[in-house]
Length: 131
Image (tube, rainbow, N blue to C red; front, side, top):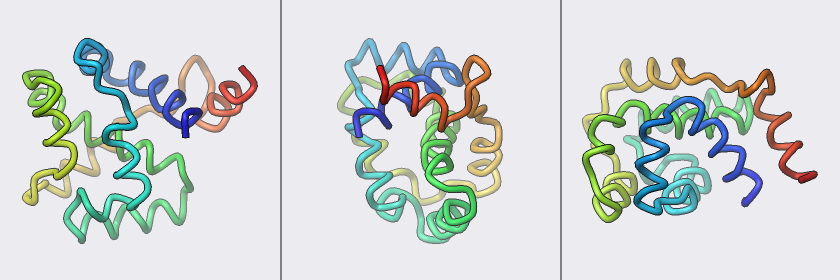
């Protein structure tokens, strides 16, 4: 999982530099929220209808979409999260709002660029494995 977290952080910093810096300042590491999101395929943190749609795309696109979804969630709530401290961020990300707007949610995911320095998710992950 450490390789996945490291790859996630590459794309987190690239896509959401302000929020990434805020998380770093508050010592909020990806394991605090990502393990629960990924291992449950978002079934604990998202409303069921949205989780089912995430599962559909995951089955089609693979693991990269799970991490893109995580970044989409962070992007959607970036303004709120940058005003919170460690405890409140961790609590918020554990159980996301039930009234999460599906159109905005998937638009936020679509806005995430899964390419860093001309390298895609799989290439970044592979590079980190051999470091």
